[in-house]
Image (tube, rainbow, N blue to C red; front, side):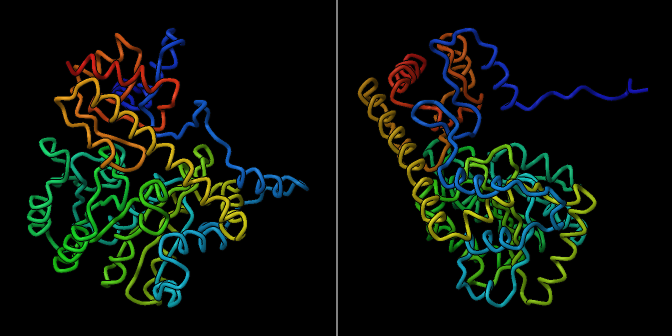
Length: 398
């Protein structure tokens, strides 16, 4: 019956993690592949603010009924306040339709399904490179997906002129998927001035901007990381924003994300909100309960919120420290090369410039695991393994 079904090739990142788990070299192996934050001790953290919220949920235990299709009102409010600010006119005027989703991936899926339903001729364009699941999700929704110029390996920067020229050649209602901060996989972000230019092109060409922000707080800060989102809203762009609490609340397995759509009017936002709920109903009906309640409690309690921001900045600062140490050691080992890009890039990820062959050597000879395109997750580094990783990098770069 299923003879015609083709085998699944597997996810390159998750498959890499299986190989890492099965590697017997437990004394030296280092995981720099999956986008998960680990502490200095190599542990997945449970944030203190989350512990407090979970204690409130558990004492006394509460029934676990279905949530509304669009999630808890406090959760949706938290997404809007975090992305746009509670005093933003678009929030006060009711022009933002927000739904809770199953992680950032769920937000992308709901948004992609909605756009393809109501803008069936639109094509989708993602940065070259981008997070691989962006392509899978939009193709799965029925889109033809293309790539726009982004990363320049020669400068370890952005092909900004080529990017602008490409956007100027797109058709009305084409979707451009953008990373507002902490670009995955390169760590290379646009400057504010570059964002201003790109967003103006998007407005002039009447494109649909879809911004995916999964690492808010890991770049500059909570507000600075949303510059592109708020600039887009300020100049009157209709806008889709998918956000995730997986990383900045360390709630990976709870699947906590959100989709916000900025509409020209309150009435249009209400209509969009209804259709988003219908889209959710036919995919998974309603979001998960526990994570919704945790986010609701933390984000809407001033003390817990401030504690959370501090904990996020601790994670951000540890990653920055690892970037600096890696740059310093490699610069000492190979003084003829410029490694300043490590500290120019932002967020969890860095495009190292390593070739697929060099990445394979790292895995085989040194038990260091990272994605074949040279992307590494800085959060897998700590003071115990940084020297080993840097020395191994130097060996394969010779």
